Length: 250
Image (tube, rainbow, N blue to C red; front, side, top):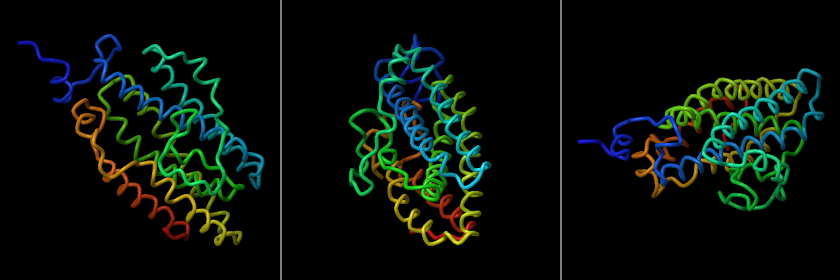
């Protein structure tokens, strides 16, 4: 007797083409990809605005590279969305990726009305040190999320995430190096304030602790760890990185 696609996925099977993807699976896969693409494009746009605030040529080159690589990562995943029928040219070029809310706006984990970026990317960066602090915390969050995404049951996407992960990991390392330099220059107090600002906003990117959809996503092979488990991993990694540079978790 033939096994259904749903049973196949629930037993750890993988899919390789849009042709054999069930409608519900397609919808959840497209949402996952859209959140990643929109967050990368919005993140790159925000960071582009602070390139010239870098204190030296080395820092500006690093910031420019991060913008380039995040945009490239978005393009890799957007190409897969195109195989599912997304209008990739219009998608990438007709969103206000630089749009930000007021620094003190409180939207919780709600997404933008314009796109699917994580809520944290609706808040503006405030100078170089603030951008580096945010990049450290969000870089660690991206690392945790990509470790999960590399295991998704749609094989072409899992392979794309495996190529993206080490580059994103380097972004977090660059942020840690940048914070060490800024702290050595006496900016610790301002950076601690930035950490206090960004910590809860980055933490919110992991969603609600209990997700009603988790079991169905796990059955489709699109999730393995709960939001709470991912958040705990990030908290440990982010706290470790802050400790290494002489900052504290809020």
